[in-house]
Image (tube, rainbow, N blue to C red; front, side):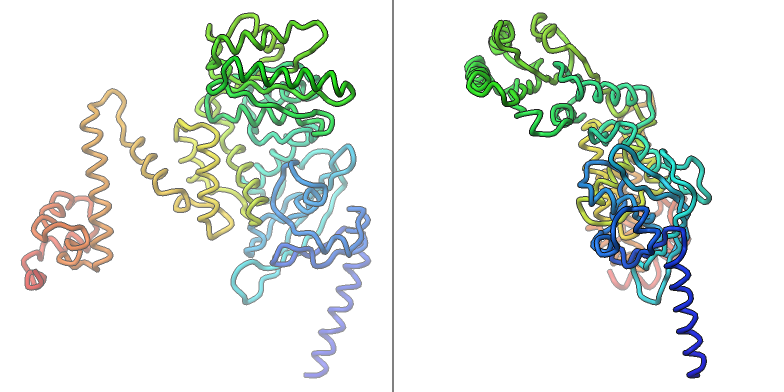
Length: 472
C-alpha cells in the first residue's frame, strides 16, 4: 500500500512538471470561479504573473463594459456547463492595447463527489487569431452566441457597450455603425424609437464614449416636464459656464421626448442655437418625427438620425440580445449562467414585447435569478410571462374574442384541477376543498374534461360513488 501511495505521488509530481513545462497555456479554474493555478506559458500569454492571475474571478461575459481586470477574467472563463461536468470545446481571449487575441481551448471538468460546481482544467491550443473561431467541435448554440457577441463588441473597437443593439439584422448593424460615427464626431444626434427601447441609454453611450473627462456633463431636459423658463435657465447656465471656463469641455444637452416638449420651450432652444459665439451641442430623443417638433429645431438637432425599431420588428436579433442580457446578469450578480434553452428562447421570440427592451431585460433577469442550473429553462421564466404567452397561443386570427376567452379559461381550469388532484393524490374531496368548490361540482368538471385528464383522474370519475363519498 505504501508503495502504491509513493507511485501515486511520483505520478502527480511528473504530471505537474509536464504541465508546468508545457508550451501550451494551461490553467485551473476552481469551483468558486477563481484561477487556482496557471503554468508559465499561461503567464507569458496573458502577460501577468501567477500571483495576479490567482486574484481573478472568472465571470462568463463577452462584453466590454468592464474594467481591464474584469475583461481579462471574463476572457479566460470556461463555459458555465463545464463547471457542471460537461467537457466543452470553445475559445478564450485576451485583450491587448488595440486588439483582442482569441485562441481555441478545451475545458475538462474535474468532478468530485461534492454537489454543485466542480473545478475545470483549461488547455489553450492553436495560434492567436483576431476573431472568435467560427466552427468549434461540440459547440453549443449558447457558445455560438457567446462568440458572436464577442465579435460584435470588438468590431465596435470597444468604444461603447453594444448590448442594446446586439444582433445580425440590417437595422442593428446600421445602428451600431451610426452609434460609432456619432460617438467619434460629436455631431448633434436625434434618436427615434418607441418608449422602452433604450433611447436615453444610447444617448449616454454616444456622449460618454470618449470618456467623461473629454465629454463633459450631459444635461437632461425632459420634454414632458420642462417649460420655456426651465429650458432658458438651463441653457443660460451652460452658456455662462462656456465663457467662464473656455478650456473645459462644454458638455451637451440631452433633450428627452422632444416630440412632447412645449412649443415655447423649443423656441428657447432654437434661439440659443443661433447665437454667433456659442455652439449648443445637443442629443435628442423622440417617439415619432411629426409636426410637434419645429422644423428649424429638427434641422439643428437631426444632423444624424438614429432610428431604433421595435423588438418585434427585429426578432432575428432576439437570441443574441437575450444571451447578451444573460452575460450582463452574470457580471452584476456574480453568477455563471451559460444561456437559455431553445424552448425558452422560442417563447421569448414569440412574445410581442409591448414594453420593448426593458420589458425583455426584466424578464430575462427574473428568469436568471430563478435558475438553479447553468442553462435557464422554461420553468424559470416568470409565471405571468408564461401565462401571457399561453394566452397569445390561444388566439385565433379573425375568430370570436369570446370564444378565445372561453377556451383560455377552460384550459386554465383544467390545469388547476389537475394540480389539485395531483396534490390530493386523487382524493376528490380534498381536491374540491383545495379548489374551493363542492365535490359534486368537481366531479361534473372532471367529467367535462374527461378526454384531457390523466388515466388516474379518469378512474376517479368512474368510481365517483365509491368510498370517497363517505368523506363528504
